[in-house]
Image (cartoon, rainbow, N blue to C red):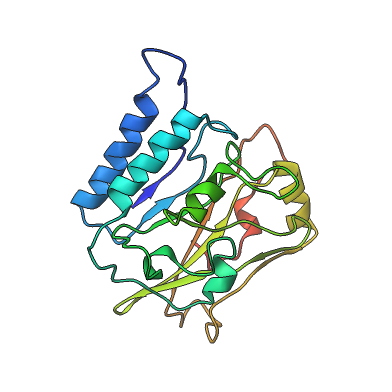
Length: 226
């Protein structure tokens, strides 16, 4: 299940609209549980503000605890190097942590509203990650040399290569692509799209507005990625 641009905390000072974003997001979580989805994929801008209020963080953490934790087994196996995929999340997908019972895996990237800032490059998404409530990925160490390595997920005979790239300022990312300093890694032994065993999915959060030429263009990513 995919959801994006939830903007939790939007208009939180408006007495009429302050609950709208939370009601909508809880409906998403509730639907995910009712439909027994394998995982929930969040495509950026979970939060509306880069520094959410304590009330927004509290309400968000409470919802995640209620819907993400549980005893239901997770039928997904991550075959890639998890220390590479989840560097800031103890180097493992959260549902394989023996200290937590996760029944609804959530994979998420950041958007332009909740992107990492400051000397240590942290965001509100890192708080959810360190609390082991989400699997936060798509965060790059250098915007001048970007390496996009997939999370390789398999369920039975189904194989998914999940690529993610959190938001980077449009002009900066445009230049990095133009300079050919963005590299997508394929699963080992997966050389051609025709014989691939993997379904490739790329999630990112960028503008594609026509009024600005220096935005993300579909031609930038490899043809074998959806």
